[in-house]
Image (tube, rainbow, N blue to C red; front, side):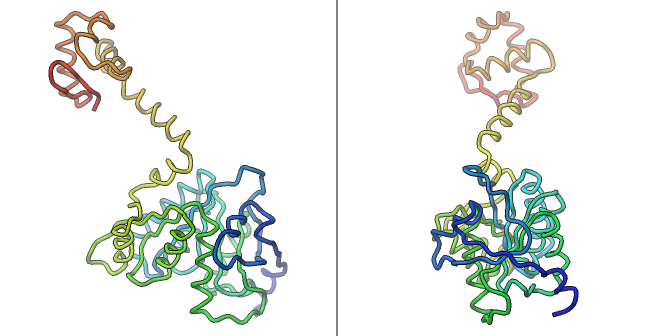
Length: 304
């Protein structure tokens, strides 16, 4: 082991999955690890307030399309305090870690190698940054343990999904480790999202097949955020709707607000808002032209 590796990995921590609310979800997975080895810092162990966790996984041979999607999602999650989990691998995994770090967030990498062996070795600096920025590098394999990579990398996928509330597969070939992670997530009762892709791209075949099998299509970060923060999402939506209920003049605003309050019939709106028919008719026509209202027939109206 090089001096750089020895200096960086001069302290190994151990924890039982049952000792921490970040890891306690592993208690219900197949072959629960008895001990986890880790470098860095586990997320704060706040009772009944476990931070939300999202796994971002995908192809080692990602496209530019996959890079943009993974980075943006990880960045938005990190900005909101969501912990991003991945496998430190080439491609989508490392992009997910970097996006979260760039947003000032916390990310956790799960290794398929012993805790004292970063793989790929080219990601030693990324591993150091994760630890330095209050994240963690985790492995179920002790220092110096003998592992069989074809087995150990598949085994670690159950831990990635087990730590997570939601798993997002960004790009995946028809046969890939990312699909293995998704399979574990489904078996564990976790929500699985897959990014739709070009049907001619080999790196989208796995995601498209997941969607065919019932995974939720991922289109934007809000797809995830509205699940993790439902109350905040509804509040944001209501505020956005309120902003949309402002017209270009007082009469238009009165009509929009009446529709927002549940009124639909033009006669009722005129009565409640005390609007003369000619004023209402002119204003509702302008609102329809501007795309803010739509006719429901028989002088009934709705918001667009």
